Length: 435
Ligand SMILES: Nc1ncnc2c1ncn2[C@@H]1O[C@H](COP(=O)(O)OP(=O)(O)OP(=O)(O)O)[C@@H](O)[C@H]1O
Ligand SMILES: [Mg+2]
Image (cartoon, rainbow, N blue to C red):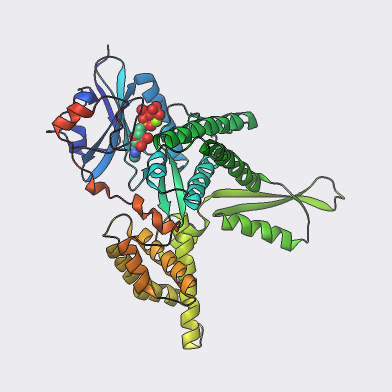
């Protein structure tokens, strides 16, 4: 049997000093900074440690599978895909096991947990969740990644403005190819539908929902398939247009931009020399159209969903000051004033209102959404005051994206495990006490 082989991409001494040669189940919580993260049942033992002020996930699994998962995650990182980032792999000097280390995905939630926590019928939230899941599978497939095990437990999400961004967390069964065939995509989508349907039925049973809900759940899961297909078609559609048909080309460009995709190249191809119509083809980049525009204008790097909201806010502010001053105001001037007078103070107030939990930029996006919804209701602009009060009291309008602030539990609040708890809780894979 080979000896210990530690391969880490994190060079901190504290990380290197973890007791890698011990089985993960025997790590001692009195000497190792293990954190309690309720993740529900999983096949392998997963533990979380806090080292150098950051959280890491450690998973003990058979060496062959660990190697494959590590390589898969590295490939996904290379392609900038939303998947947890691999931090290392440690081959242990006994049995045939390894520990796979990944960076903990901050401010993320498991689908299962949120679905259990939110009050029903929560139609809009569920739509946001399933939109994000379909979007993730499209992103993976466009990059040649076959997942093989998309499920409620293997998908995490993070809030991103009024949308959610889904992340892949478990790549044991994945395979990365140059591109995927239609058959491979269909198979992956079938796995998603089967896993998610099973997961939803399981949750419904745990929450003691009546059996009649199953028809709604199946329809919901089929909806994910439909969303996937619609998004795939928008991205890969090759319509025929006339050369001078600016309107049609612009409309399609705008639709892609609205979905967050930048277009890198437009091609118009005639099938024959005298063809009157041409095939229109867009080379579509990764999702990040608004994020890139905001980065260029303000230097801020935020999620695509957050960027869409912040750009609207900036645009509205620019229009407002021009109207007030009755003369054009340069873009630089508008950006500078928006940052100083609107964004920074608004972000500080919003983050304070939610008790400094989660991402401050997300808190500002929530403030804008709540202010808008309350103003709509009142028929006039209510200003920041009532919106901040609603955020603080968690009485935001029902089914607003801001309601999902319930998911912003700070990782800093995670309790440390005592060795007593460790003995009780693990390594029982069915441990589900915190649900
Ligand atoms: N890097 C991470 N960041 C945040 N959460 C994580 C991370 N890694 C694992 N988790 C949490 O731990 C759970 C279990 O991890 P994972 O799915 O990789 O384990 P598994 O035992 O292989 O699962 P399965 O039973 O699906 O085989 C995940 O659902 C997720 O909630
Ligand atoms: Mg899993």
